[in-house]
Structures are given as structure tokens and as C-alpha cells.
Image (cartoon, rainbow, N blue to C red; front, side, top):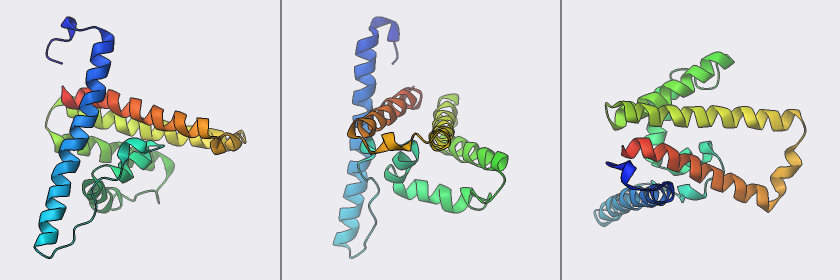
Length: 168
């Protein structure tokens, strides 16, 4: 990422995908070591990653990725802001605020703010897309395996794109 002009698009895309697995393996591995070490000492810690790259939605991704931090943001930021028990425009602001602060928590840099903003945008567009499918009664498509694979691949690609800003 330091010298992108030295590489072609395919190489950068593959590097981004490998970074996605690197960050997952690093962080999930550290979490598993902490869970195992705590277990040796008699403490039970909950699972922190649950196959996030098999998520079929951005919301599902965040239920599977860094579960402890996602739960913390939910419990101590999203819910005190009113969660989803507020007017629609306020809910949109709540979503953006939580993801923006999540980005800021990872680092005080515009790249992390962009990363958080992208996830907020993904989450909201996905929400609008689901409402649209319900509105036009197109939900029958959700039962087909091809649609499920398409959703998983789409989420993975979107998350990988956001990782570019996280890594930068």
C-alpha cells in the first residue's frame, strides 16, 4: 500500500484479500490465546470471533467480528443514544455515530474515520435494500443458495474494500 503505483490492480486486490485474512488470523488468534489462558486460570471468556467472513450481511458481520468490542459499542453507545427506539432519522444518525466512533477508537486518523463511515454506509444501504425487497415482495429470492452465496461474497468484498482504508 505504500507504493501502489508499482503494482497492478489484480495484485493490489489479492493483497487486500490476504490482508483481510491476516488481520482476522492475527486478532482472532490473539483472542483465542487470551480465552485459553483465562481458561487455564479458571475464567471463562466468551468467543470473540465467529467466522465473520461467512457473514451474509454487514449486520451479521458485526455480530461475528470482534464480538466483545461490538457488544461494548452497542451497550454503551448505541443503546444510550436510543438504539432503534427513536425516529428513523435519529436511528440513521445513531448508526453513523457508532461506526464513526468505532473508527476513531481504532486510531485518530482520517483513514479510520473513512473505514467506520464505510461500514455505516454499508449497514444503512443494506437496511434500505432489505426494505425495498420487502416492499416489492421479492423475498422469495432469499431462499435460493445462489442468493446466499452472492450475499456472502458481497459482504466479503465490501469489508475488504474498507480494510484498504484501515490498513492505509
